[in-house]
Image 1 (cartoon, rainbow, N blue to C red):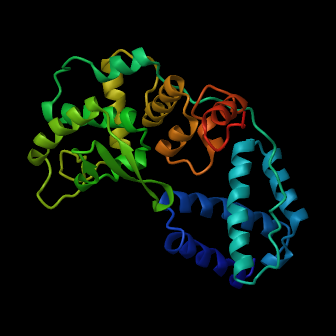
Image 2 (image 1 turned 30 degrees about the vertical axis):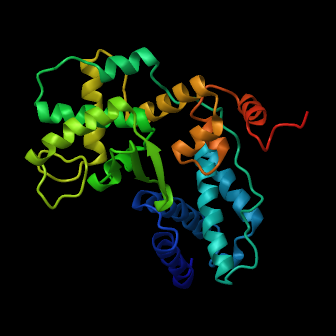
Image 3 (image 1 turned 90 degrees about the horizontal axis):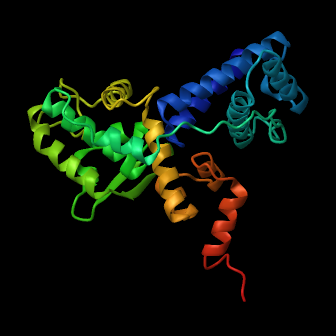
Length: 303
């Protein structure tokens, strides 16, 4: 592709950072998928974006399919392409989005692994394992918060001490796209948080805003949280790899099983689309829709 065409990739990345406020990780994923498109265009002698039509996008997707990419990966690629081409349409580089009507092959949906209620109790109520009491208090507070409020890993590590409202038992969370939401904090999680916050000054300098910090007094990294959670799980005797997303899924599954309130679970998880919430449950979407139709005042049929 020409240097002028490639320059639009940098402009799009700045758009993702400045206007859409996407995370560095998400932007890196966009860049990787668009780089694959550029490489394919070069192999097809397509020199600028006006040469990339719907047929070209179909051939690009077909190449990925032949190389063994899953339907999920291809759909992610298409999402990146649609976002980029929409930006080019907005900037009057293209007249229409060539990826709009292209779909990826479907992959069999695999339910995320989760822990049942007994497994969660074992994880959260393990006896003292001889670890540093301050680290143990921090780790249990993190685990309780994952399960109590259904947080993503990125949301938990970005928490600051000012995000907690212990009086109202609430937490302000910044999710995807820098969108904020308020989630409740359960009694046990609040007890663990208060215990950790009482010990936190021994590890964190006075000017550190992060709620959860490392031994060095800095905000915890995602990898550190994953490792510490796995340590808790191993001591509790839980089989397999236990990770933060598993606790988020357990939160959603257990709450939906006990309440049947689909829209509330969607709101708590911070999902923009209710179909996304389905992935976190063991119930099919038709059943979830029936629950909503039967329960919501604006959805119930008049008798």
